[in-house]
Image (cartoon, rainbow, N blue to C red; front, side, top):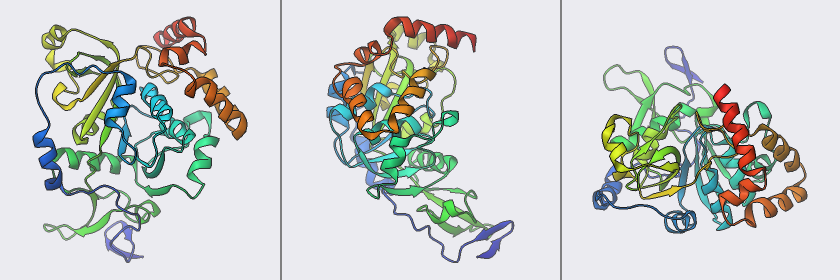
Length: 334
């Protein structure tokens, strides 16, 4: 280790050892974005059709929300039912997403800042088994590094700059590079732009044209929606475009970025949806308990995910509208 930058111990090598999964060259992506229609069209689709159309085997995906808050669980279940494989998971605090997709061994590569951990609930035995199987290639980043990479892609530049991770093992296991600042000579990390294939984001409200509103915590969804080639939106409810136009400043994701809109009430369940419903903690407790036994968990997944026809049917397995109303009351008290 050498001390080339004040306050930072930097490795002798200027490159992290992780593999760069996503091409950071913005010029290679411009033709795609230039050809993407900006027309105001009805973008409503079914869950089944949206996954079949926009999430093929081998593509890169990222999920909005944060850990177990505002997660598009309905889409993850449909990815499982369609048996997607060889996905690259761009995992910005995607703990429950990784837990779900590990059920079907859907991803074999992951750019990761935080997965497996289910916050105060403990670790996911299911996700941990898959991540430790040797069948998943893992490249490490910090939360902010993954945000900087998305922002660079959204801005159309090949990389973003940061001082984070310098001198850390996270840097060594990333695919970042150390560069010299042309103005000061100081050391910085070049974080490669991340143009992902599909962003999957659950929102509070959307119109049929894809204009979206989010209340509360937004995570990295602003930059994610602008860095992705395709954006699949699930929404608690559809609202009329007149409402969008009446308050344009409330639009967080504009419709021209969006490819599919699916109305899925309670689409984040069992996760929390700010101002709508609380997370179902007994559900998580029971799932994590069952995950300890792979055979029992496989049977649980067959019953509650693979053999259901809709997210609504999935919810019915765990108390239906009665339970959802309880979670609504609990969220209103928080």
